[in-house]
Image 1 (cartoon, rainbow, N blue to C red):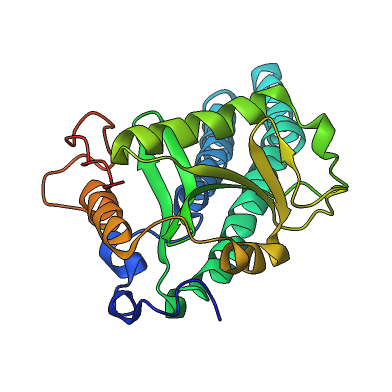
Image 2: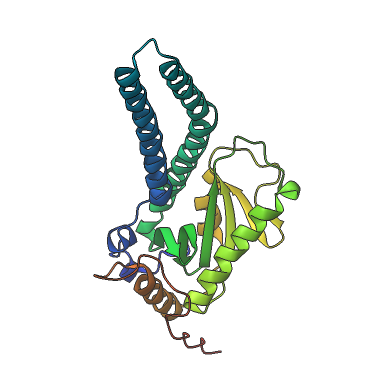
Length: 252
C-alpha cells in the first residue's frame, strides 16, 4: 500500500485544475513564440525582397543583394534557430511525459503542481505527500547520463529551485533530477544532495519513500502551496518567496 492510502480527504483535490498550469506549459509557450518569430522574420524579409524588386527592378543589383540577404536569413534560421526550437520542444515533451506519470499519483492523495513559476525561475513539478515535499527538474537529454558528471550549472539550477520553494513554504524539500528518456548509470543515487532518477522509476520512488510528514503538516503545506500558485484576478503569475508569513513549526 502506498504511503498516501490513509489520506482519502486529499483525493478530491486537483492541483492541475486549481493552479491552471499544465506540464511543460512555459516551455511549450516559449517554443510557440520562437516559431512565430522565425516565421515572422522570414516573412518580413521575403516581403522586403519583393518590394525592392518592384521598386528598382528584378534585374537590378540591389535586388540581387536583397535576394542574397534573404537566403542568408533562411540559412541562419535553419542552422541556428530551428535546432534551438527543436531542443526546447523535446524539453516540453519531457515535462509533459513526466507530468503524465505524476498525474497517476493523484488517486493516492499526492498534491501535484506543474510548471510552477517563481520570481526569476520556473519549477517543472512540485510534489507533496506524507513522504515529503519534492521539487522536480526534468531533462530530456538522450543519454546515457553519468551521475558523477552532472554539470555544475545544472546542479546549481536544481538547488536554486529547491531553496526558493523551501523559502516559500518554510519547509525542507528534496530536489529530484528526472530524465525523461535517458538511461542513468546509477539511478537513485545522489549528486551533491540531488537524487537522479529515470522517469519510469519516479512513481515507485515516491510511493516507497518513508513517510516524514503528518497529515496536519501535509494539509498545512498544501494550503500554502496553493495559496502561492493558484491564479487570482490581477495577481502576478509568479510567486514571491517573501510574500507569505512563515509557517508554524511542527510540534515535536
